[in-house]
Image 1: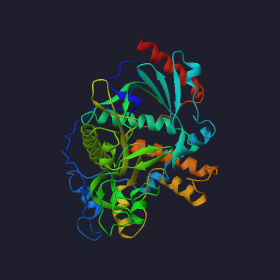
Image 2: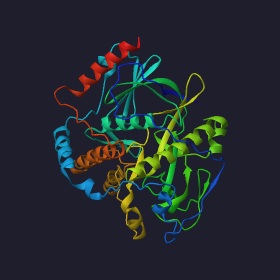
Image 3: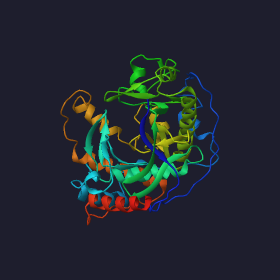
Image 4: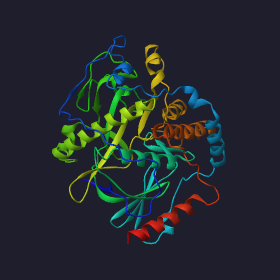
Length: 404
């Protein structure tokens, strides 16, 4: 019932130097079964932001919208984006340039190559939403790969992962494992615009979603009284919500594996929110994927807390905007989703309009802004002297030679 995919361990081959080190954090024991949510009053002292801050002893870094929409760093990066608008990594063919690769699987964002006991995951610049590719975004693949690696490194106290080496800014080599056909979506707020988002189903009258009992009276962008899991599984080309009981009854996972993965997902989200808030951001919701290694251990795979898999809001302005019925200031791809929903039917139209250049440019900058804000690392704009595919092929060849 599981499909082969990745696992992550200690790097053994030549790797890109990562600008971070391991930190420790105590995991939280969480119960199982249905979650019943208590509604937080928007006017109460337990307001969304105050509730988020109450467990912390230090103050979060303040990030304002000004840092996102203007400044020397934005001007510098936007200039680099403009030079790369037509030089995106939209497709790779390493099976034609790297000896020993057995096959290629093309995902919405990642190209996955089979190399025996290992998988080569190339994160491209393809932008997906609504279960399809919408555009290509300069530098996006590098941002996602490096963001995930930062979080993979910082969350090893919660769960093992599958990374073997990082031979290129866009590439991760991972051990194969059996991937559970379930995405663990963790939510902290009532929001979203896709068909499976919590706000969409809630406004349509659903009050029991994926085993979570939801109270009456919730409003868009409201903070939930506790985090909830809303798992999905694939049906043809789109994601379908499932309950924990359905996952087990359908044989997608055993009960023990589901409960362990659920605990890890909730602990990862709690830690992710803590780190994000320390950097002036709110981690709103995200999704995790897990697989089982040869030794039976459950491994975190795919990506972690990236702007592709997660929603992020600016913390400083959230409470005031929520109280005034305004949308939060977001640093993710939500604005691109909304543009497509306003200009076509992204679920049903066979051909979609091209994303406007200014939106492509903005999304690229936002992804880089988020990476630099969370990691406190400066994004390194790749050189245009060597074609991206040539660089990746060269680096992957060297890494695979070291694996033998």
